Image 1: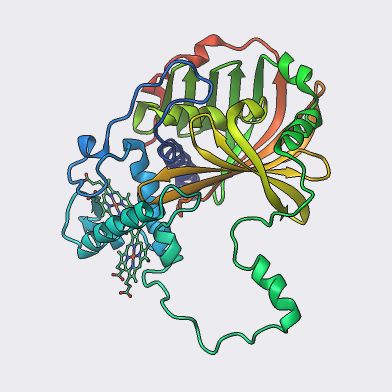
Image 2: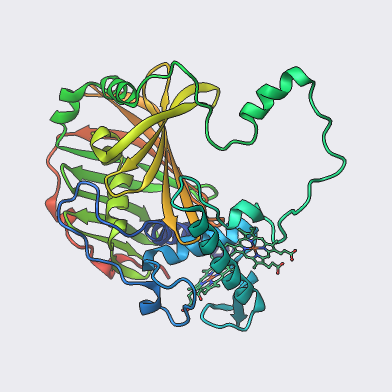
Length: 398
Ligand code: HEC
Ligand code: HEC
């Protein structure tokens, strides 16, 4: 009897882990946007606009379909609420097309306002979003909290004014050029010829969400544009595959095609494609300042990808390695960030590669996914069938 209960508990743990991962996967695919791909030459299958695929869209017209969930999660995170704050819940289920909940209408007015503000501001680097005012609360703070903090002595004020509350790192004279930083990075990971030699890789390890148990993970990549990732749980496997201009995501809901921007974003989430040939991924880049990550100094490079996505890259000042990459997805309601941290660089056949990659998302249910590698093999033949469209059959999540 006891054994059975234990089994049930163990199984449900596994299942919930699997679910988190599977949702994470569909979220991850959702967190990526429209546009053409980075280095994939042929265009991916285009996306549809939201109003073509959803029932009751009145203000988010024209938004690419894959931006719906990232946008919803971003609004929820900005207000510090969950989906049911704006959406009606019927029989324990979210009835998202319903307009029964008045907060949804308020949110529509807010969306219109944000779109208008950003139109007024123009196409600046910074955008106003729900978070700009809400900061994780339903009621934005409209007044300063009294009593005000005591002002610092005059001498300190200039310095404080200089560095205060700026989300962007401080630009200082004497910073290297972006070219220098990127060239130094290329040398730090082993040099151009070592990178150019890499045609494929096979990586094994684990993947874990912040509260989930690590599950087995495997990825294979083949230059220039093939890759797969498999997450193996007892509840089944989930996969992400790209093969030239096409790509798929397999999770508990079956197999879906990666559309438009999702394909390019997926490609960049593969470890090798993310870190090799970094310079080729951008149309422009500049060093925007210096910052710290875990007490280590980093140069910050602001870059624009070939597909027009903005990024911010952090390179370790001392060793030149890429430490962090933040990608911004522009949406109607502001830019949604996604952050990837690269750690534990080790040498593999003359190349320095990160053995831990942590990605953070604007998603309160699964804010962090960490991939830890136990083995990286370079230039070995891969099973080509792994780049085929996945079969839904073994995605058995009860
Ligand atoms: C701050 C309010 C708010 C929150 C929080 C919110 N939504 Fe929405 N949601 C909206 C609004 C407003 C629309 C309609 C947009 C329009 O009319 O263009 C919408 C539309 C949708 C739709 C499309 C429905 C249809 O078929 O027309 C889905 C699906 C959805 N939301 C899911 C979610 C999920 C899942 C969450 C939680 C992660 C969530 N929403 C959180 C306000 C919200
Ligand atoms: C310019 C500042 C500003 C921005 C930007 C903004 N809001 Fe608001 N929002 C407010 C203010 C002010 C209120 C009123 C709060 C109150 O009544 O206490 C409010 C209220 C709301 C409410 C009602 C909250 C409640 O308690 O019923 C919702 C829902 C909401 N906002 C959603 C959004 C969404 C979604 C976005 C982004 C698309 C957004 N807001 C962007 C300022 C803003």
